[in-house]
Amino acid sequence: MKYNYTATDYLNKSLDGDRMVNRFLDRYESHAGPSHKLYAKRQVVAYRDWLADGGPIPFHQDVEREPYVEMYIPQHRFRQLVELDQDYDDLCRQASNSNAVIAQMREEEHIRNSNPSVKAAYEKYKMLLEICR
Image 1 (tube, rainbow, N blue to C red):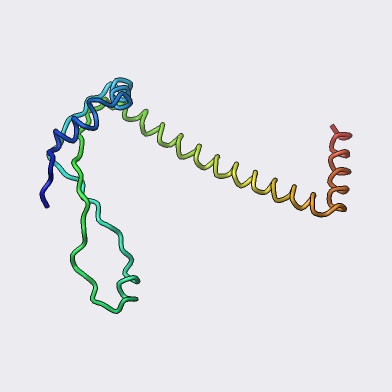
Image 2: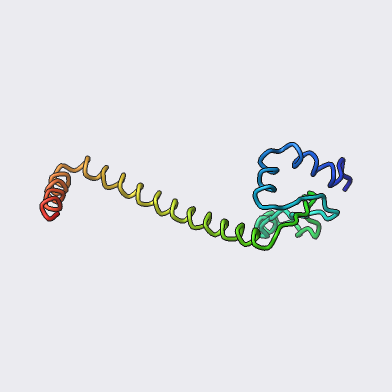
């Protein structure tokens, strides 16, 4: 497969003019440069799809390639990135939990609005909670 650009061209196009990348590099006291290596990402195709067609399983898979970027970063800054990634995962989990709680609240509100007896019982329940406080 022939490429129209080199890793240096790719780096220049994607990094030099990008303020976010430059800010990232400055924030983490790091440097980035072109690499001679290429990242090869195989397209995932389920075997059951091949078997369903009844045809032979091909031994050749298409590969998408793009150049790597080499980055030099101090160890303490790398640890910060790892911790930041963990914080991001925690926030995603919390957001997922929050979405589930909101969905449950909307479902309960719909049930209260569609059933007058449930709505009356809920109002009494809220009143008892206020009295207990």
